[in-house]
Image (cartoon, rainbow, N blue to C red; front, top):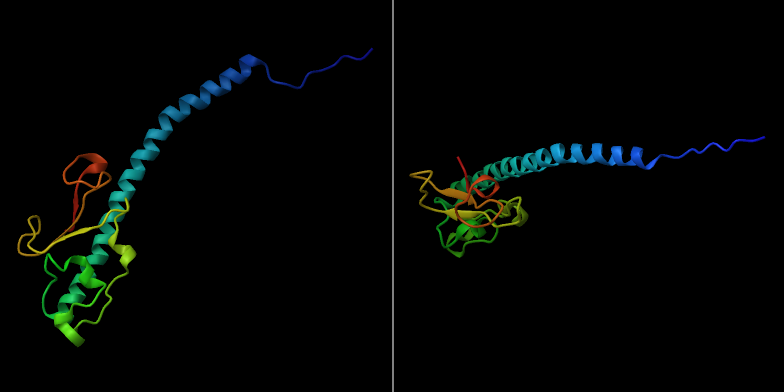
Length: 140
């Protein structure tokens, strides 16, 4: 006589596994997304450093920093008044977007960097102000 053995999981065993996976997800997922926001803020600061270098090269070639009207586009497209002095492009256009795909903002008369210029990312929400991932990020 032959006895059939079942090689399957019971409903209780499956529910226990689903419960364990759910509990892990509740703990792990918020940490991953919180870390992702910090990573994007760090990346925005790193990109600002590259933009600062490009602005400094522009200043060395042209003898002044870009104006508010010229903005960061002056790093990509020649400013007519400089003629042969402008030796750009100084940076790729894609580098002028923050990690949230918003444009960096250039302010010639900085309010954070008094006596210099500000480069600003408005964070995840793309609007001025905010907290956490939505907080504004300024160059140092």
